[in-house]
Length: 352
Image 1 (cartoon, rainbow, N blue to C red):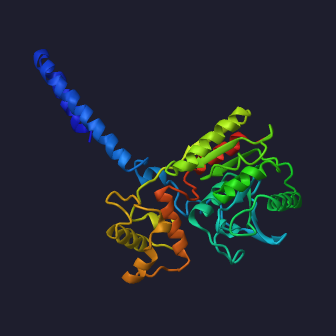
Image 2 (image 1 turned 180 degrees about the vertical axis):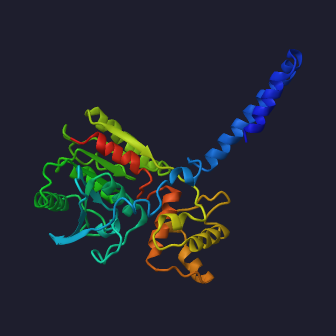
Image 3 (image 1 turned 30 degrees about the vertical axis):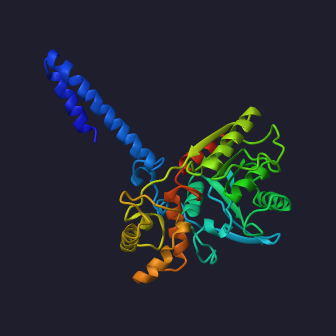
């Protein structure tokens, strides 16, 4: 867009002074017009990144040569515990799912975990953690969402029991929770000594608890499109900073889908099926002409559209995986692994 403008400027600069003086106001006005037009278009689409290729650096099999998902499944205190320890771990990561989630979302289905789901963002978070030498433990909530009273102490006991059983007491402990899991981690940090935590797509429970001086450094990973949560989050960040706690934030912006996105991010979806889905969603107006989602995937009856067109997924359960990626692209409220580098850099900076 701006290459033509630059050429005009160069032409002006080569002209004699008397001609430049006449043409320069025109060029300046043109530049201002282009700048305003760009800002208007940018704001119409909301906060966005340049392209999906700039954001999405990891495909679903990016870690195939580095680490495998090989979990151990246990049952304790009435809930599922799933964990995996890499060689020579340097820290422990506790993962807390959101509402309607479970520990099984963080690992692929396998002979070792036949009930595992392997949702695309959750599994990539686990793979990132294992590749960075974090032992990973996830626990399922008792109900659809986490509760914040007795369940805190149940999970605290489970984590402490597991750490002692695995003889990992010498390792620092960190935590990441999304949505309801973010609420849970924010208050669990008053019961367990975390080196640092990540509170994802939620503002935390900081108006409902006493915040001790020993509260861990906190990274907020959030989606600015959810403006009401963002305002609360900023208020809580100021509150934590006022108590001398290290706080940072990472913004997750919407991005355009591509014909290969679902194949790139979801095991079991091939390129042809991914392209069919993209084309159909664009035809139905679920995706605009630039590839951006027009609504949250939860609010679109896209499964019905597949049935009408006779598009059959390799596995019906993959609909949850597809919806997660649609929600992620819309960037209002979804688990995300796209910011894994910032998240794990945060954890590693605060290991103690």
